[in-house]
Image (cartoon, rainbow, N blue to C red; front, side, top):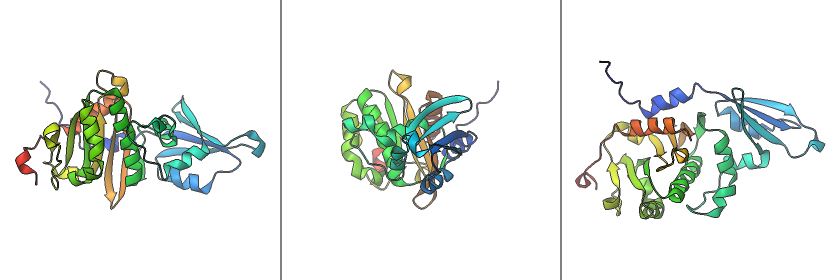
Length: 249
């Protein structure tokens, strides 16, 4: 019998995804410097096609191998640098520019994500779980105290029937701890921001992200909507057992 390999670390998951490269083609009169800097920190092939001033609104397309993924107007792309944080359940999520861009670049490693960008992506996934209203959501924000500003979000998810598991260094005890499962035992938890939602009964709603802090406030990571990739994130999280409430402050 072949021994089963142990689940990968979160850092190993990022390394696996880094093997993929999507092609982003910008159609515009010239390639804007700001856009070039933005994608220089993302592991994609960036190309430029001339579009005359009279050719309409500049836009970009994303291709994965030979498969066309989608397109988006350039003004919406700039929202990625400083995205608006929408409330869970807000109708603004439907047309949010940040959400459109994340849907075009899943399973792509980003070398320099900041906390605001990660929060915007996390909020989109939290909103998805809230709208589905079932399933399991695993969340790691490095330290439990970083959830203090989002207690209303997680109370709402629990009230919707989501099985919430929280991961992080035990520097705070959620006052709704009886309604969630807490995991605190593991050195890697302090280095990674991650999320995995199984979609409930609909695997098509599964989503997840992994971001490893490479320097203070700067993360390298990816997000995904692929159920198998989400399962890998759950497997990585499964290395950390649930902690008794007595171990929390």
